[in-house]
Image (tube, rainbow, N blue to C red; front, top):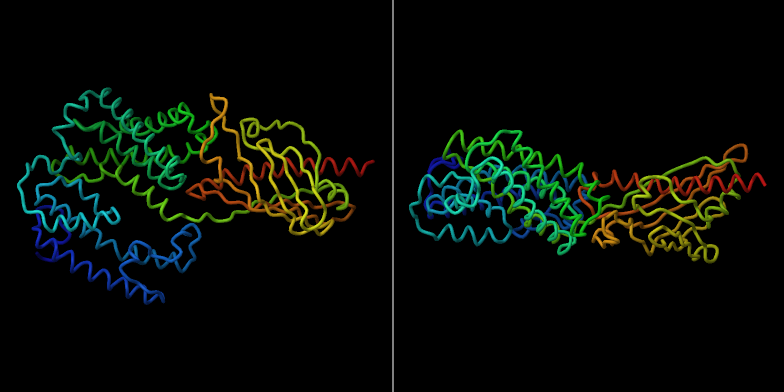
Length: 463
């Protein structure tokens, strides 16, 4: 085997050569990683391939040094991944096994058993016509998948939606994880998977593929609403993220099926990317990603002195029913605030439409600063649903306020700059996408409170 042969996908590789190249490649890769780690002032051993950083649970808050280190390790691994996958495909072909099993190359722990098996299994002939198929068992699927355009589309949409529902329940009910696997990997793989089912018997046009890619995501949303797992609000929030990603998966599926039908016997391994979804979700759950603490600050000028504003800040009266569509749709909104005691150690209770926030006072600097922690959080919303009430998992502990403060700054002319701040966390990924929604909601909550405080303080001043 020459150096150029390491990069080829065509042909076969014997079990002895596969084992020899694998051991040599791992030795080179491991020592290269040790050198990289040493240059970054870090220690590296075999177990670091499962846990690259001691702070793996804080991937959302990686320091610049950690990010550069992981990026360097990743870039250095790319040629080894290419060689490893190509050799695995050729060894599978030599063993008479379907090449789609190469997806197990990326399965943690299980891939070690897979590599060992490939080093042992003898060579065996297989029908060449089946080697390049995007599917593991064409003869079995021939009779199950309709040949007509509409029949294959209907089956692709229904089958993919059912798989999507099962994986969504796995993520939200079993793993209780609203992360990258659910909001990114799943819609992408559903779009890809549905197109590959749709194009099983013959090539399909791009428009047909995109429609089939998007339809399962829509059907999945309807199913989640029907079985009372999610409500309209959260599904509407997730749609701008999930729909484009599903279409991206559909575009890739279109490219795969076009490549296969235009050039037979070219490997199309990505059809099994759906197997990646539960593994990715499991990794996220095991890693226990630690969410960052986020901050929202809102300010308003009040035509009243700090003393008048302070009295309304510590305990404000009943606020009128909201007119904003956001709150009327089910997002929790503030109603009134009650204060038990005075000074540090007192407890403020901010009553929301879904229950009270319990806020022990940490700083009482009258009339300049009121700062508090939050020990109890009510549900962030009451889901809009055809049913009377649903208890979605994300309503418990997935959007948590950690603390807040009101800062009062005296302005000329007996006026006050009132600034409200909330520190919170949410365990929804990608954080940057969901922060757009959460920051906007909290800002609107701030405005509702600050406006009421301003109206009451200015009214008291007038009297």
